[in-house]
Length: 461
Image (spheres, rainbow, N blue to C red):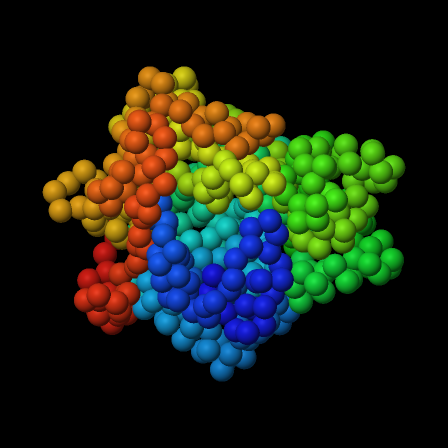
């Protein structure tokens, strides 16, 4: 959400879908202050996006920074860290993040590390080239000195499911050698993203509007379709090929005329329209004026069951925290938005016995708090913030499904956020119990900035 230049702020407003909001800030710090001032129920924290600072300086084009431009990006990371960012993050299968080379990421991660921040990454590949992508992550952690976190660890695509052993071995070896690396995951076999993950990065050069304009060119369209039909392209992650058109689920449209397609597979829409799935995908992007939100069924349940028990894996929903009301009902959500954390207890503790109740609590509270260097969160100890969830391990249950996604989980009696009731007797109170949780380098309150954060930077396994 920041930093933003004027063009980025204008595009952020223009690209909004069902959820409308004025863009009144230009820095990450101003955004965080805006959120807290408006009132929030959960706690909110943020990283600074490597692709965000890249866009401020370079735009959304496939270009490489000059030394002077890279220095500008480094300064922006430093500023965001002192405004409260927890570290640096990037998503390397998406444009424009994918255009960044490893040395650029190391430079920005080094600056984040100097400010006590970690490096979190949606790796360049989660399927065909997952080993190389993981090695890049390990290399960045080593070179920058920052702890690294692989977010939503998975092995995507049936052809790749057997690679999990190698992935685990690589992380274990890196940790044993002193490299600080961990991961988080969600507990579903489908991921949720957009149709940008079904098309090569080159056609998206310059941003959403440039991408759509190119797709309207018949010659470009023909070339894109040919690449979309390659199940294992060498330089991008083809999630449509990995899931198949039947293994997709359309979730979110911007154009009201397309919303009746919500809940259908891409294969169904293609059949309805009498076109190929690739043509349907391109048409939907053009007609919707967006990347289109959809779920790809990519993962293997046996792998998920193994991952949940790994000692260095915590849990994240990888989804916005929607309320089952109002504007949020205009699009479907991935069920992880409502069910991911309850599902850990219902499916993997109570049903499968893949991990113990105590292990699950650690992976949902203490482990992520420790990874994020938040010593006063994640534990029931005197002097810590009173963030408490009261639930019944025998009845807690996720209710959200792909067909009916906007369903709250059950079995949670109370949620206390910063000592105030956010959920009482199973029902949300509506109270603004949350606050912004800022990183170690925050200069507000009594914080001393990046220099002070670097002096006592620690991380434990």
